[in-house]
Amino acid sequence: MAIKTNDKILITGGLGFIGLEIARQLAQRRQPLVLLDNLSQQVHGALPNFSDRGFLHNSHVQVLRGDVRESDTWATALKDIRCVIHLAAETGTGQSMYEIRRYTDTNVGGTATLLDYLANQRHSVEKIVLASSRSVYGEGAYLCERCGMVYPPERPAAMLCRHQWEPLCPKCGAMIHATATPECASPQPASVYAATKLAQEGLVRIAAAALGIGAVIFRFQNVYGEGQSLKNPYTGILSIFSNQLRLGKVLDLYEDGRESRDFVHVSDVARAVLLSLDSDRADGFTLNVGSGLDTSVATIADLLRERIGGHTSAHVSGHYRIGDVRHEYADLSGIRKRLGFAPEISLEAGLDRFVAWVKGQPVESDRLSQASEELASRGLMQRDDQAITV
Image 1: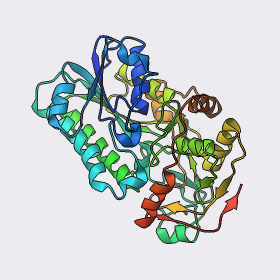
Image 2: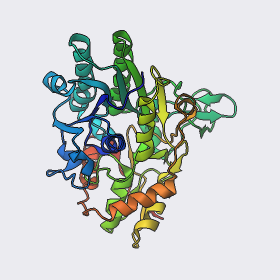
Image 3: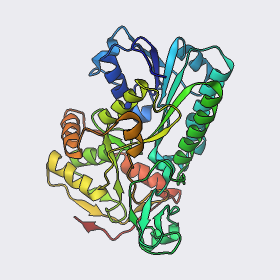
């Protein structure tokens, strides 16, 4: 179903990075909104500051603090709600590998509690938009000259230990090259976080169909932009790198620095969500949201260094994390067909905007080393003393 301008929308994780951008765009058309958030200290810090978000004071925007794992939270938040945009989740891939219960309770349990409420209580919800992740694909799609499109499994630890970074064809063992991953690719989660996102998808898909609720599932690529947390050391390579550059620290490029990701600006992600609200053409579908382009981590480091300035170097450390994928970028043909979506913000323009915003923010302490030590102590990250400055 299409959402009307007077329909009330609930955004879980509504005070988070993506939630605030979606809320901002919806507030511009005076959409009635409820923003639900637990204000996690890992993301927002001890004293959250939203002074630059004037739209939060609009009469048609309501802010609630609550926990998606609690039925009472949903009972309060869902009053008169027509559509739920479900973003609330724990998001650190590495951290998920040892905080398994917390990630599962929040991501899977929180979603299950929502759906349990909808199945057993009176409500007005007619649509759910779920934020899933590109991580459900694992390594994603590759092309082999002999075998065509293939989907390699997670790279084994023994392979990474030998610094053999590139996956091989799972059928013939030949060299393969990354290509755009379509939604029909078989999911192969390589982290607990990814497994929880795939579980969310299944719960929403099955329960929404049974309850007669329209459901759209978006698999977001690496979302970046103004407003993302500069405090969280477990997620957001651009925020981590930009903060280190401002502190004058050397950037640590894992593996050989050539691993690549699909970076999409948050305003494009929010626009995709709004398109799904204005139409029923995506109801019942799972769609990629990204730029459709792959960019190496080394390139991202160079682009940030150019914009932030200074003489900080980067080095290829050879470090690696268990569960990381080598390459992945999105096939956007599905969302183009269903919603007419195409990204509008180029990486260069998006980084200009991001860095301009970063320079106006306080410099945060660098907590990446602490986070890395935690992973290494649990055998989830391996270090190499041989580094190459670039």
